[in-house]
Length: 219
Image 1 (cartoon, one colour):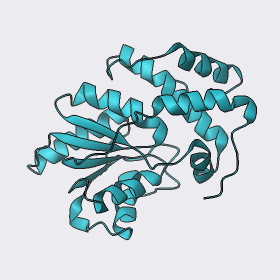
Image 2: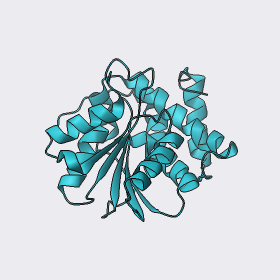
Image 3: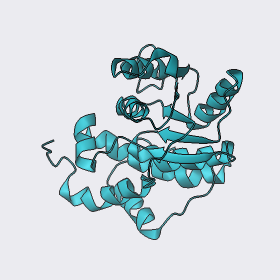
Image 4: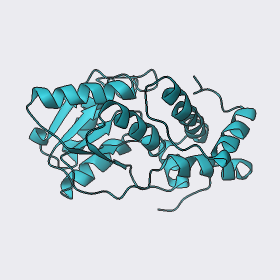
């Protein structure tokens, strides 16, 4: 794919610092289930389908209702549109469960766990498929709410520039990166997630991006 550099050069080092921080750098391995976390990014469903078709797991759960940023794109709900996309890519209907109520990451895991139990499906391992910059927060939340299972994080393998190009809005991506970075520490303080390493260089990049106006996703 031919890329264009969309992240301003003056911000690139700080944006890349946050981008690399949120990537858990896990190696995808076989698991009992793939869990696709709902969002505005259809790449989550694309990669969940790809991994299913490669044989990494026998079942996908797509979880997510809507956020204000996804209602217009996915009017029937994130998880439902994700399932439709996966089926278009060749995943059998019977290999996908939909959890259509979750409106935050904690609910993604709480409701998915309940759905699997309702279907009598026991799992000891899961692959979490998310936006690239959601990996660390998804991992920290899952280990808080579902600590007994083995977790692997995965995202559609794109470079920062390719990802920004796929979304089509560099400011949105940077704002989301900044917001997710704040949530790593704040959600741990609130007991929503386990604590994660938080290097000084990550904090410095986070603060510099806030200082130049990337604040729309802060809590």
